[in-house]
Image 1 (cartoon, helix red, strand yellow):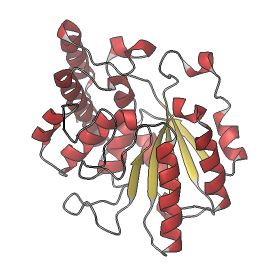
Image 2 (tube, rainbow, N blue to C red):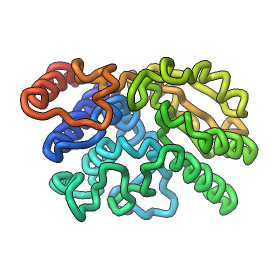
Image 3 (tube, one colour):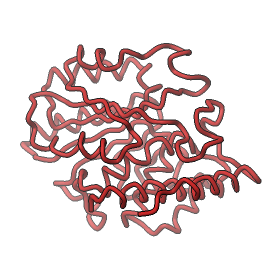
Length: 277
């Protein structure tokens, strides 16, 4: 299914699922999850990612690595929506001895790695892409990075490695929401010009509006054909907290879930902003 209206609504359905999960748990990175909703909807429900919920360990599946592991509520919600496990299990998010950690846990069906330390997942993704090349496998490896994550030196080590190894089966998507934990990235430590940085490291760069399903579809479809010899990064300009107006672009909402009247307001704003397919 790759209908634009369907995917736009799917992104908001996922946002509501994330918010409900985090409100119940009284924790979770809500705003980090909101910014990547369209990205995740396009990957999993837009015909980009080759996967099978009935066979999570299918050898020929594409691999998706959530390097910004704090956005685990979004990936958990996507996997539940796709049918990897019963949605009722999301009630175990952030519960003692549960498998749904605040940061991503591999124990969840459909999750490829356990990830929390920023910069870690990107290295995993490059290693998986190289292994696929060495084993003459045809699957793709997609990874979702955060922009604050790009302060980590391991990101740029991996970027050099992937270009050197000509990993044209590796696609990075950068959730460029312009915020880190305490401030806006360009106030804290400027990251721009991002495109020139990635190009200088040997990557093919595409920059799109990250809350636009159509722009994401146009950028991601066709990459499986490997028309270029090296890796590709899609820089997706997004809004942290997108869909919840009062939480958007407010750095101190990082890592927090609303409660009480604010929880009701957040859900009401998601309902109001949901497009009707």
